[in-house]
Figure 1 (cartoon, rainbow, N blue to C red):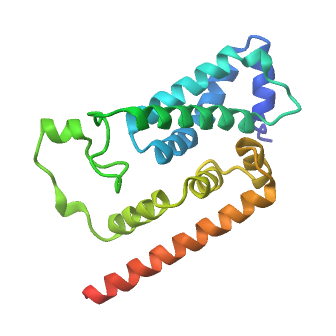
Figure 2 (figure 1 turned 90 degrees about the horizontal axis):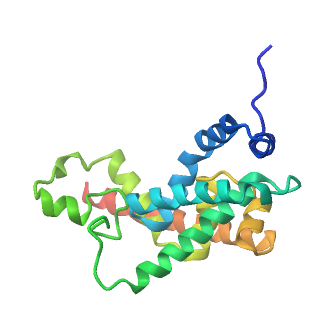
Length: 202
C-alpha cells in the first residue's frame, strides 16, 4: 500500500515543529506553478524567479503566523500576488528598460534585450506550427484585462479552485467566476481570429 502524500497544511505543521525536510517538500511541490504564475504576470523570467524566491522567504519568515484553518496554497499565492503587484508598480516607475526585460510585450520567453545586445543572431526558423499557436495563446492571455488575466492564471496555471481565488484576490466568488468566463470568451475570440487569419494565408 502506497503512502498518501502529505497535505500542504500537514507539511507546514511539520515545518513549524522544526522539520526542514517538510519545507523542501513544499518548495518542490509549488515552485513550478508559482513561477509560471509570476512569469505570466511579470513577463520577465529573472524577475519572476526573484518573486518566487522572495515568496518562499516570506513563508520562512512568517511560518509561525500560518493558521491551519487556512489553506496553505491560498496563503502562498496571496503572498506571491502581492509581490507581483509591488513589482509591477516599481516597473511602471522605471524610465529605462531592463536588460532582463523581453524586447516585446508579445513574448514572455523570447530573447531579452541583454541577450539581443550580446548576440544579434536570431533563429527565426523555429517559430512555426505549434510554437506559433502557443505564442498566439500567450499573446491573447497577455492582452486580457489585468483582473481577468489574474483569475485565469490562478485557475489554469496555479490550479486553484474558485473559492481560493476569491480569497487570494479579495473579491466575491461570483465575481471570480464572471472574470473567468469573460477571460475564456476573449481567448476564444482571439484564437478564432487567428485561425481565420491562418486559413486566409493558405
